[in-house]
Image 1 (cartoon, rainbow, N blue to C red):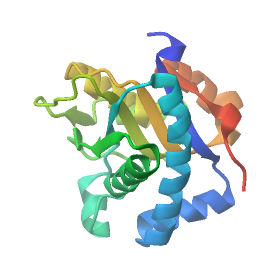
Image 2 (cartoon, rainbow, N blue to C red):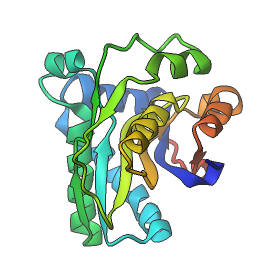
Image 3 (cartoon, rainbow, N blue to C red):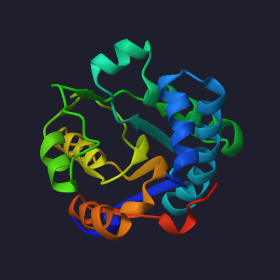
Length: 203
């Protein structure tokens, strides 16, 4: 797998402000924050569509743990994906839907204090893809709110490919730019991700 096979389209640099925006949407169920994130991701989707050129798209959310979804009362990435799909349908007149093709199959240790290598080891094999997936002719896009080392996106790619589904690109609200020179650079390459970081916006 070469570096360019899985382009990552991210809207924002991860910093104190964008971190607060994500936490508000994820942990406080702030729907205004979620809609704002979705609008930014949808604008980045415009670039994705110009480069991929599909007439319809399927957004596959990176799953949170079942425990986190139960605590929040909803799936943050599924909600974010649905808001993005609505923006894409409205503004680009494209067919776009969300499919929960990935699910966690075990508990995952908190990754915030782990190195890139430790994150890859921690997350490896943690997702299972549904065997009855149907996306023939559609662009398959993995979506998450934040990419730091790329390990979680890499696990999503692995799980989908195990189920004979090849994702075409990755989409994220934020990319942790402070890791680009040490953690993100090597680890993204390890999982075949090319970050479109030249277009990231700053607050």
